[in-house]
Length: 408
Image (cartoon, rainbow, N blue to C red; front, side, top):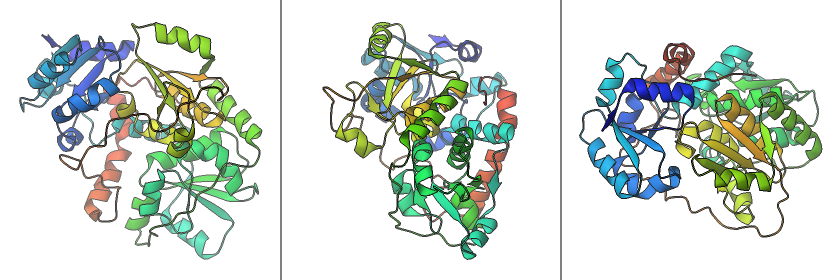
């Protein structure tokens, strides 16, 4: 049985639960796919499908681009107990023939959203040359790297310190307690810099806040040297209550609702809906003690890689955080990305679970798309092409018309 591209698009527009599953390897997926497609290669279905798609009767529409993978994927998913698995009529070519947009790269809709945020809010940024000049003159600045810690350790802006995205509202006031200190948020490219800087602006920090324009890519293209192996991070401290108040106000403006444990139990009992429960703290804090049933998805990465963590478009998401600001800020962005997202209010006490969440082992290098913003050996032309692609995403979102994003 097949589903037409029109029917898939209609489900996305009406926000019905649907999974549009690309079963090719990551490299061909990155060459072109529908905006809300999730990538799960045929060889990983047995490993990942039940983890990423928690409800067996969710609608799953599978496609490839004529490689003959999709039919095998349908059978494998049905063998795992998924009951509503169908092929996309005509595969990826059918989507093209219908006149619908194809997006390149990975985590495309999160990146497109970051561009929309800058477009709508005018998120301030500084080019690499200006930031280097501030460093050289020993200006009063704090450079905060919003990526995962391992990415930061691989390559970083000179003097930068690690503050992963969802931690910024908590930790930036510790890094820059003087409101006269200028804060510069960076990532490897654009998205996490823009979302991180705008998070601090939305939360009303008194400091001047900028994104590093084009991140470490822009730094490299400017001919400036990165540092390697840095291990400096900013710990939680200062006025946590103030951070909590700031973040809650941002979540309120985005329309985020709050629930307690009894209401969470009611949501879990609604078996006709997919429910993702994520603890948005850093992995080491999560492993030390987390609420039962909550998976670990550090907030900055959850906003960056939503298609990986939550492939069921239209599902509900509940977030937890022992302090509050990380969940509230993450929820504010997910709400703007069109998700029904709620924050759980409860004490982290009683019977907590420890250790990892049991997520599938990471993928190997087979079929992986070489990201132009990772590592230190990227060709200049690839980095420049990547930036040009990002600059065009706002116009492509408008042509596509399915996103439903809004920007507070």
